[in-house]
Image (cartoon, rainbow, N blue to C red):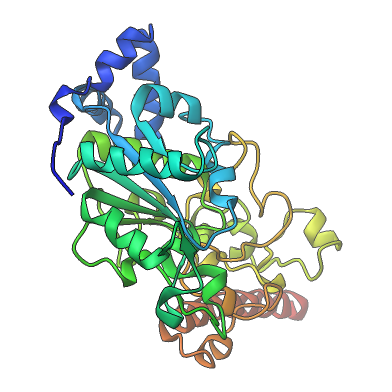
Amino acid sequence: MSNKNPRNQQPTIGEVMDQAGVGRRQFMKYCAGITAMMAMPPLSTAAFARDLRAARRPSVIYMPFQECTGCLESLTRSFAPALENLMFNTISLDYNHTLQAAAGEAAEAARHAAMEENFGEYVLICDGSIPTKINGAYGTSDGHTFIQQLEEAAEGAAAIVAVGACAAFGGVAAAHPNPTGAVGVADLIKDRPIINVPGCPPMPEVMTGVLVSFLASGVPALDKHLRPKAFFGDTIHDRCYRRRFYDRGLFAKSFDDEGARNGWCLYELGCRGPTTYNACATIKWNGGASWPVEAGHGCIGCSEPNFWDQGGFYEPLSAKLFEERGQAAVAAAAGVAVGAAAAYGARRRQKKLAGDAE
């Protein structure tokens, strides 16, 4: 593949915004929303806006592999920024076989043209796991396996964003017994920066926020699972509004009991919040309307590796449950959570007994 690299001919995002009639106040409001969502200091908004305006509008190649289109469905529901704003003002989405008008040979020709013209500079978004058994025969397109397509697309990428639990960790396809040998992108590509944005599906604002922040300041700080710390730095439990009930030892015993109606902690109903890192509790879904725990259902831990194999979603977390599956780190976290709840319950019982004795 040749390296034409016309990136220096591409307009900056600031120029695109100006041509679209986006005023300074609206642009600053947009940047303030992004920096607030990423928990950046308020004073950083001006610098973020300056860097974003100076960044050139990048080519984005969105490659689907072994997936269900749920991640893309989630992305189309982004409110900050909206997908159409992202596509027409911030990035150039040059390939996505679900959203683009072209199909078949025309679509593949457009992808190869964009990759050649922007070699070394485009952002590659991967959606879905990569099947590796039988030399990748479980996933093929246009006469090539998904492994071959991934390696070809990754060669000229400036960075790779793996969206969804499948692209990040293998997801549901990699659940036991993993018949197709499904793996995440990072298991195959070792020579390019990779940003994992897991979830089933991921939060739309997290996906768009990662893209915009990458344009302004490059690859963000990542955790050990290559997830952006700005969005995956705290557990669901840390930010959950039901945490106060957990700390008081108040737990719903069923989804329709008095505790559930009063908003008590869903820990004993299998909530994975104590061991799950994500921003659901702060950003929420559907434009900030709500999120699963607020709607009355426990967190299922979908942004964590191998969450499909971590027991039934309605089984309470326990160290034993995870030790049986060889997940020592999760077992330790679960043990701490169980211990904290048990200790609080014991203190409450002691106080009650002391009160009765008086």
